[in-house]
Length: 196
Ligand SMILES: [Zn+2]
Image (cartoon, rainbow, N blue to C red; front, side, top):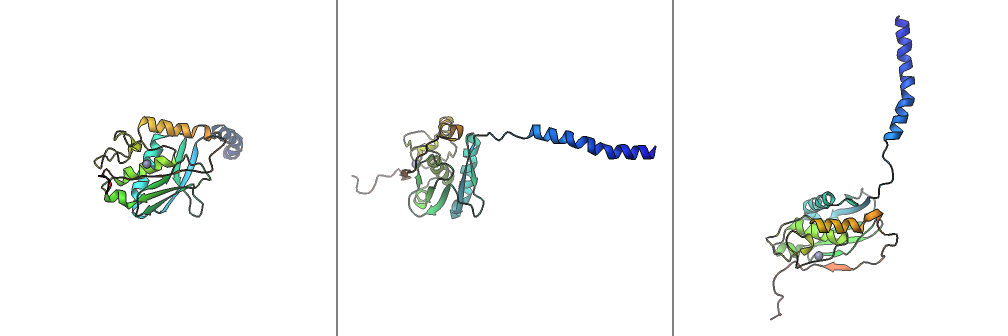
């Protein structure tokens, strides 16, 4: 009896393993996902680290066709965040993998009283191909400085998320632009000096 049990026990793994192999092959995810992964390097962004993290999180939660993630160390990123002393300025995308976008997070916007997470999320919106819309409401990210310093919304609205999903639909266009415009954002509602 003991001998029979032992023989049966020895048989079970042999019988199970082919079954497990087939099951695993069937449940494996299909490698046909069209989600574009964009990598970024925020190592030179200093005090903007947390606002960037939150801005990226907000975008990733809102869109489906593109996903932002930090580049693994040593790998070249698709776009870079840096901290500067000037006005924020950003490459107007959509940036695709292998691209070279740059987000300059300018201290002057912070000095004017604007929310750092909103600034980081707005500038990231340019990387994803959204233009400025300064006359828009606070609920819109790309209205930037328009609604004033009291506006701290750092999430894209539904229309903005839909436009980004469109920009990256089906993995993006086959022909991608090589040259990109740079958008300079003057985060200020003050009348420029000398403009009387
Ligand atoms: Zn802008």
